Length: 149
Image 1 (cartoon, rainbow, N blue to C red):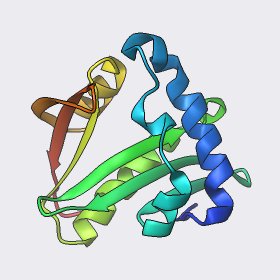
Image 2: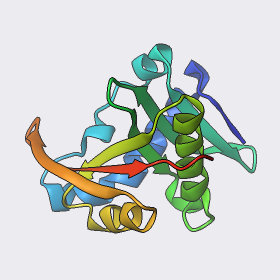
Image 3: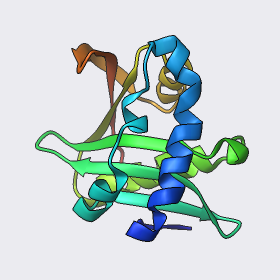
Image 4: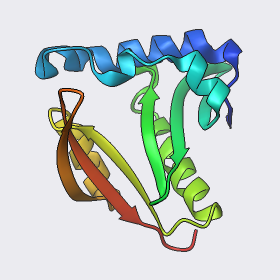
């Protein structure tokens, strides 16, 4: 079940972010940005959703409205729940939110060292638009044109 996150979800979101992104520290050479996020502030600003599965928060997603489309800013699934299709549920939710909000496309970025994420997004129809170095992180930007959902 997807629902908007509340401040009561901060600890669960932080734990998921730490567990999901820590394997990338050695590849990137530092903690990925999602491990440094102030999730309480993000929740208070809106656009954070959690996925409850088996009576626990097992994943979360952060969506931001921008001038150019809906930004899928962050997505993570608890490592113990990976392989259950929850990432697909989160991605489907993001794309529905974008379409329901009238956007013609959705975009995201990921670190270039997260090659499996880049491949996963490409399989879902996202195409690379550009690369950039931001805050010392090498990011790959991708976008997907939305069909009527």
